[in-house]
Image 1 (tube, one colour):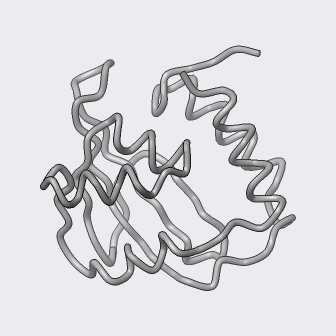
Image 2 (image 1 turned 90 degrees about the vertical axis):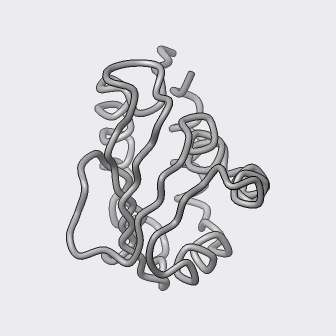
Length: 135
């Protein structure tokens, strides 16, 4: 199986294809958050990627580009973003936040509640497939 750098164009294409296979199959995320991300220290391109996380439809959507309106904006390092969003490692995020390596502007309570959401079996399977394609 081919692997791709997290947030690279190839990774995004493959992750979107995987997400499309699972659309409507899982349980709904009841906590709505619209969050813009600025991922810095990216090992390709211009060094940063503007992305977003949106659960307002009931499904978690991670994609490039910023959205409006948002509840919060998070500036985060590439490795920490990968640990949180691909590996599902909330401890990495907590440590980075405590060390001042994550900058949050806006409703931090929405971010904290999002970290308590447990994925349903379909979402967990989709996450495992995305993790498998990620370098």
